[in-house]
Amino acid sequence: MRTIFHLCHYSKGCDLILGKPSNDDKPWLRDLQRYGNIGIEFGVTVLVSFGIGYLLDRRLGTTPFFMIVGVLWGVVSSFWVLYRKIMVGEEKKDASKRKG
Image (tube, rainbow, N blue to C red; front, side, top):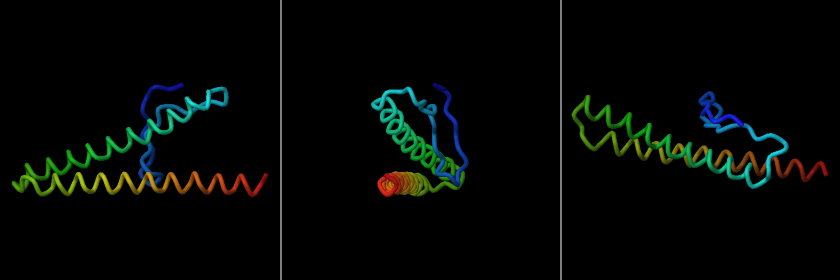
């Protein structure tokens, strides 16, 4: 299993991957990896958005405004990515039920 973070292309949801689970992995390990990635993505997105807001505030002298906007943007975009992942998972479950 890779331990290096890999940042995917933004249009794919900006996934941070701890490593791709192999077929011989235990189910609890795959779940831990999947949900761990979601938590890491959420935190990194909020921190990066906060950092960009902080830098803009320092540059423009609008102390709390862009930090607040950055954090809100990070939270909203993280929830959007989480929603999309849940919907893709549900679609895969529905497709597998139809097949078998």
